[in-house]
Length: 347
Ligand code: FNR
Image (cartoon, rainbow, N blue to C red; front, side):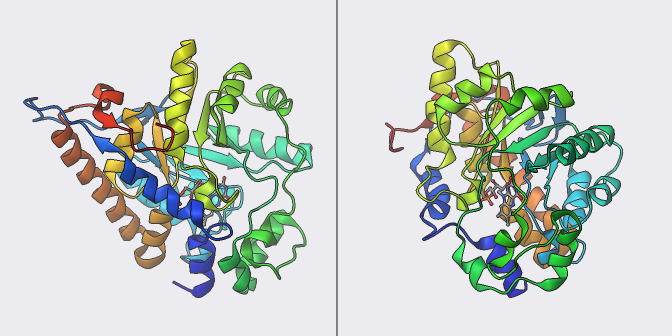
């Protein structure tokens, strides 16, 4: 990888405490497997927002794919297509939105991640174009009214060529502070709960709020009638000292179950997921699916479509093996009794 790509992809906010915590929190959750279950046939397929997926994870939105590979996000699209994995297309992709859709097969499911533009007419056009092109879910990022301070990225000089791709959508940008700052100036800082009704009025796509960090906001999301939330701290790139998503998942599912609301919203999780065991812990605790960012970026940057395909296959193999070892043959059999969360801080 080039230095600028590595700096942008790998960095987290400030001292990268949350970035590391995302990974380490999984080490505080332990399994309670069942024995003597016939695990000849294991099925880890599922549905997310009503779309079929071969796996309980998806490729989450990560900006600037061309910093890692000349073909950018379409590399992820092709690998996702081969494996029946859902891809979330970022607003700040370095390929055009239509290029990424055209790289997909007819059967493939894609979602769109939205950074809300201060110009609502522009936002409306983007959303309605996405719906027309067959996008199956609108994931509105709600944890980034301003981008976090990613010092590794700020120290690296942002590649002019990639910046030019962004300029077409983002207008004139200041590149002196790294890639993240350069591309984020259009994001609407005034976005608030009252805007959800407006989004619901302009699209029929299911809406998911990406970047929720407390159960109270999940309850508000239910009350505002959105279809899902992603418990996420943006891969440790936004508010430093945000908790890991698995901590938030435990309190969220408790609050939803206490109200009998667990079927009113789909709860997704991302951040620090590297192994199928991480994924299975989230599913057992009540997540509908899990987003993965950097592992696919690194696979893409070093080995292109083959690399991302291999990364997906590794996770599939790990899912099959670990489900056998847990004593479950499909994901619906997983529940909180399969994990011991007493080492998480909230317990
Ligand atoms: C991101 N993420 C992100 N999220 C978003 O809503 N819009 C975006 O444009 C981006 N861009 C982006 C770039 C890069 C390089 C990274 C690493 C992340 C956050 C992403 O969707 C997700 O929340 C985290 O990446 C999940 O953590 P892991 O899997 O990278 O540990």
